[in-house]
Image (cartoon, rainbow, N blue to C red):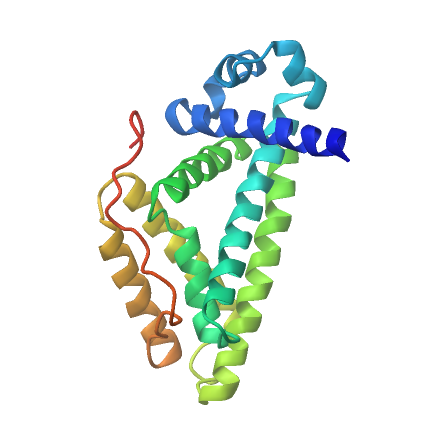
Length: 221
């Protein structure tokens, strides 16, 4: 068991180093050698855990998604009750927005990964699967909201999920570029959810508001 735990911890250490480099330099400038230097280990150590840069990048993106899922689960638990579909949609979208330092780092990594995937068909294919899962889940939640509020005729859930993901991705880019503040992004999201659901879902009780005032890490943005 300790060996397995050490193995997971080491892979996470290397993925964290990759994320820091990707956020500050972009993925094209990142190599196994650069990651080794950032993590304070040998290149051979990196190659022991990841055979290629693409393999390491895929692991890092999976880690970003797992961390986001853990935060969503923690927020749902903090509410002390089951979230409504509308609340869950808002919670999920808020976690995608780069509203604090960890999410800013994740946002930069995701953006760099998308640019990299644009010229790497194999990477793009794997990313498409994750996006499809998110889209399907969102459409299901929107459909559940419509069923309970009588707004089913307003918009197709599939199209609504597509628009919502595009909105949050766009807002995230503008926040990372410091064109919009975190508060402006959340206000725009809530306005859209109000149009979509007929009213804006309130943040679940007992959950502290997102930190929308943290400055980007040095060298980013």
